[in-house]
Length: 120
Image (cartoon, rainbow, N blue to C red; front, side):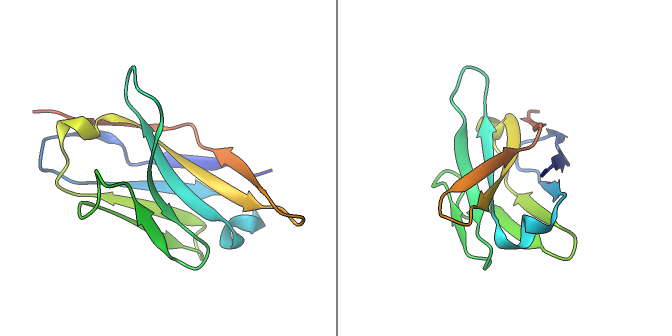
């Protein structure tokens, strides 16, 4: 069973920075893609950034140039560095691990979420 634990959220002023961490249990971390998603009140959950097992990354247009996703396989951890934060970045941030299955397809595992609030 895979467990994900997010940390690093909090209150920050506009223009500030935060680094979120997603620590995963289980041996499958190294072969899995991991993504960060966020959900603001009254909004649907949206994809923010993804990193695959080889380290390739993708970002939502709204965060390109401000956010950076990275992974440390030795620590089974994925990070989301968030710079130049804006009030519209306020949301609960979730990490998701996509475990590849032997015959194709994937299983998704979600963390509990961490609140990020950008406000003066």
